Length: 180
Image 1: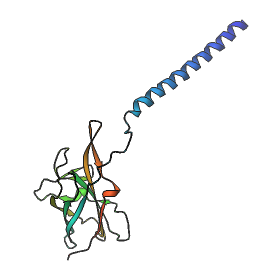
Image 2: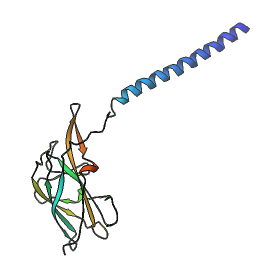
Image 3: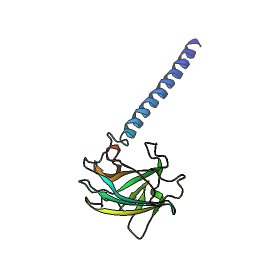
Image 4: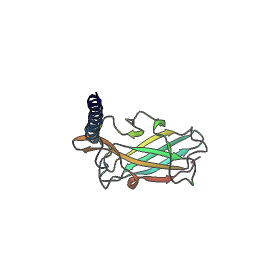
């Protein structure tokens, strides 16, 4: 009887070891599988991407901001992120106004908090091109004081097309004043 109890205890221990072993193996397989979904490095825009505000008209009475943008870089771009702030002392603009684009018959599109120059996934805004965009800024309390523009591109990485914001080095900032 004593020998049977010892064998029973050993079989329970073998069961626990097998269960823990299977959990570790499954965790390793899941880790290897999920690792393939995470990009190995940050996708960046090529050096020489640049978008500037050539001119703007900020009408405080009807709360519209009309900006003229120029691609003064060396590469085509797809569009831009646009953010504003109502505090001239604030160094980073945090209020996204891409959804406030007033489409005046042009071919501007909204995608993932960005304003695109053309529908689809292509970089269509060529160097030295200019465009005007009109935004409704009536929901910005105390008015717009500063604007930030960040160009965006479609980049091919490992034969996959990715939507990329061009980051801090290409950010264009400008203080805004009313034209009324």
